[in-house]
Image (tube, rainbow, N blue to C red; front, side, top):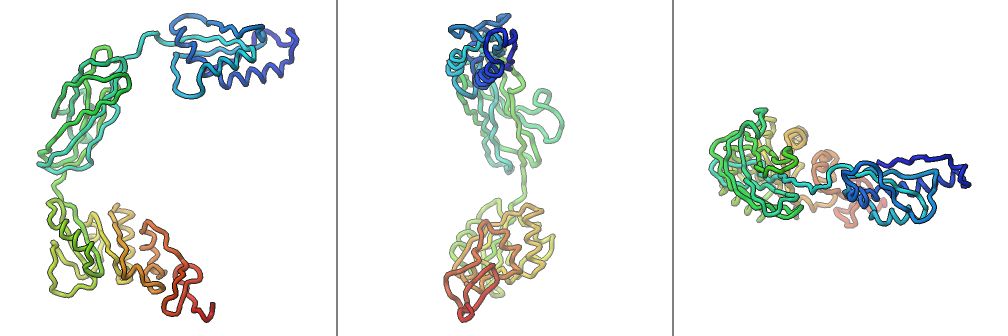
Length: 370
């Protein structure tokens, strides 16, 4: 806190009140940082210590700075002191807090996956930071309890693993990794907690928590393509062999009775909310979006907006390159265009079918009318 304290009426000392206020205000704007230079020296000492500005004081004004001696922003304290001396403004500093070094250890961060599967390994990493505890040892634990139980790490939770660690220097980050294997499904709260040495000053930052969901359900993916392009074939085979994925396919140009590596081969895009919302992800390889009905387009849009469905789209040489006849120039396809992470241009330089674009998407004019 900075306080401008009026010591005596300015008029009695032969200088204008307004000039003194301007100079004191200019110095005050920068002298917050001066506390860092002098607060530490005077920490835990009662009463102010005046800084001699070298010459006559402005008896009408002064600056009182309260500080614990730390600096984490702004200009260097020395620059602020020089300005005060130049302006002949006295500075009074009052030290706050202790003059003993701070000692603390904290779990500064916690990294864990949002989802895991029974029987599969996953890694939980806690990041430990210490101050004034270099080379001291401490125990780091990872605990687990049912999510939403309302209990805290201090009074509940099963200890899954623990490690003895040696703390680093001031501010050094020490990663501590735990390799875990879940054995039951459900949502759990994971906690990384450090059992700090006795002189730890802030026990409240000795732990961090995050939730993880242990699921036995496979990811349900729909692959949509007009034809079996190479990218489609590669991803289909990869997902079909993945133990955590159930893949369905819809080949818009496919024939009845065709064989595909998939759990299910669709003849049409999902038409009901129940069918659509059962999918976690749709991967579309240069599809013919115009083959979808208006209700199916609306259903896809709601699936992304309400269900948070993952839509991955890939352009191709067929339906994404049809010029004036492409689906992106059809006004009925506006909801689909809005789902793409790109802006489609309303004007094209290439001539196609004796037509060229002159304005917004979907509006075309012949060259003869140009």
